[in-house]
Length: 320
Image (cartoon, rainbow, N blue to C red):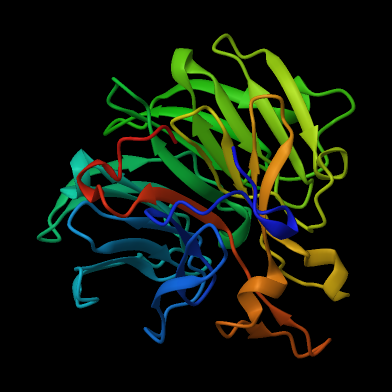
């Protein structure tokens, strides 16, 4: 791979990265230049965002699911449901090429699949975590390839569950604390299904990436410090067609700007960081959240979706 100055790889103008960034969605190219922006929708807690084959965008925000067409017109708004301790949606997956969407709704401990018309196609109950606040219950949902099932992360419990769609029957449970010695230091934020039944799991404040094999065995544990990343979190991940891993490192709750230098990083198959997007690149182009306690402007990137903007028909074909 040819490199430009400042350690950046040669820019492939057709490649874009869509970033979920708390109250907005930002598209950048490999040079870190903002190429598109979806903001000022009144939504907060945007943990995941996806580019769709028709050029639109779908994302989960704290109050539900939002889908936009290529002109950024809102075409689907599906609300989260109120539970005993409040309302909070946490993540979504795009199904059937954008015809359906799976939303994890922590307020009512449920995964709902809805179609483009807003019709609810299935409701999958999740183990009730009513003793926990809604924010501590669930995060990422992913469809299990070739099965009518989902992977979902239990955030504070540090668990990854495979549940059957509809019935909610737990098919597999992977307890990070039980798998790792010493125990995992952070919660289960995201789960990325891999061929053969394996998973990459990111542990948020634990700043770890844990690779779990198809039989539930730990294959690798990567730490942000070992990777040379300056960040407070490791969050949503995507595996690229070449086998590289893209990781988002949102900078929530900074105490000093230096803690959140890296927002997104690409790891090659030797687990070497070969590319990164820094907060200094992004903060000059879009507005972040200003934390009242510190006055720092935070770029809260929690998920990344990489695609070829010239081939949107295949935008959902890459491994996740």
